[in-house]
Each structure stands twice: as C-alpha cells, then as structure tokens.
Amino acid sequence: MLQLLTAMIVLFSFSTIPNAIRQYQMFLDAYQRQQSGDHAGAGKIYADLLSRYPDSFIRREALFNLAVAEYSQNRFSRAATLNSGLQTTKGPIGVNAAYNRGNSLAQVAFADPGARDYQNQLRASLVCYRQALIADPNHTDARINYEIVLRALRRLNPPPSPSGGGSGGAGGGNRQTRQQGLSVDISNMILDNARLQEGQMMRKYFKPAPPRQNAKEAEDW
Image (cartoon, rainbow, N blue to C red):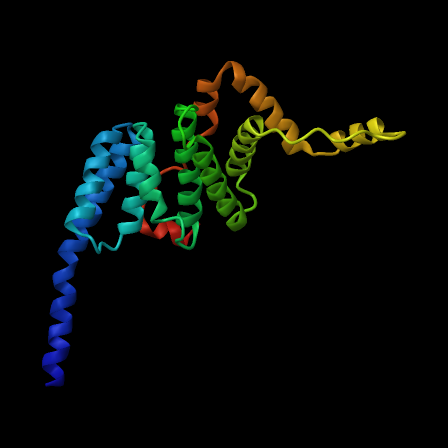
C-alpha cells in the first residue's frame, strides 16, 4: 500500500511538469512581447494564462504584468482594479502594485478634473503611494508622485492663511518656509512646470514599475 501511494505521488508530480512548462512558455512569450512594446498582444496572453491556469505558480507575476500592459494602453481603471488584488502581497510585487495602482488612480483623476469623484480618486492614490513608501521608504518615484498628487489636492482645498503675526512673525514664517526641505522644493518645480506641460509631466513621472520577468525574481530582489 505504501509503495502504491509513493508511486502515485511520483506519477502525479511528473504529470504536473508539462503544465508548468506550458505556463512558463506562455508567460515568457507575453513578457517578450511586452518588452518589445506589444502591450496588447502581451495582455491577451497573460489573460489567457490566468484563465486557463487560475492556480498557476506564476499567477501573481502574470497578474502584475497584465496590469502593466493595461496601464501602457491607457486603460487606467482596469489597471487599478488588477493591482488592487496584489497590493497587499508581501514583497516587491506588493510594493510595486501599490505604487502602480496609485499611478493608475492619479491618471484616472487627472484625465477628468471635473469628475464628481476627482478628489476621492486623488485621495485613494495618496493611500497607495503611502503604502508603497511605508514598505519601501527609498521608493523615490512614489515619493515624488505623492508630492504631486498632494499638491494637486491642496490647490483645490488651500489651507487657511495664518492669522496675524506679532514682531518677527514674517521673518519666522520665512525661516520656516526655507526649512521645509528639498523634497518640497522639487515638487514645487515639478508642479510649476506641470501647469504648462501637464501631459508631459504625466508621461515623465507617472510611469509604472516594470513587468516581472519570472517568479524567482521576487525572491532575489
């Protein structure tokens, strides 16, 4: 009986190898298409992989890359939805999914500033960037984009002016302004330029984290 059970385990293990090879071949084909700029073709293969093998051993990587493909085709709402299922994942995939979802939500908001949920989309974007920064405080792109979105919200809801100041009030205010830090200065320059070239800013700064190459990449990050 024990020998039969052992034989069944071995046979079952060998039977999964062809499936694993097919999944990896599909993933690699999609990834190569994505790298060459064929985001539509890559997206179709990733979607097919996820449909045919819902429990694939590279499901998270395929889902992440599918979201990147959707983002690259300006399907920002779809990309945000796909990333929402990954941003709680531990490790680099979770961090980059949160960052990419923040970008997607910001793109949706900036595409239609007159929309009723414009501010809610921006706030949701900030939550995603904050999550990415908590997990990776050195995520420079998330920090810059967080500043951009935050300042966009503040322009809509400016803080009240400080009430009168006694002697030295103005000087103290100036000193405080000078001490706000390099990151604020950078964000101010970005935003000043954005008022004239908003489309260019979106292309330059709101770039998604790149697609994953394989499952092992997550372990070697």
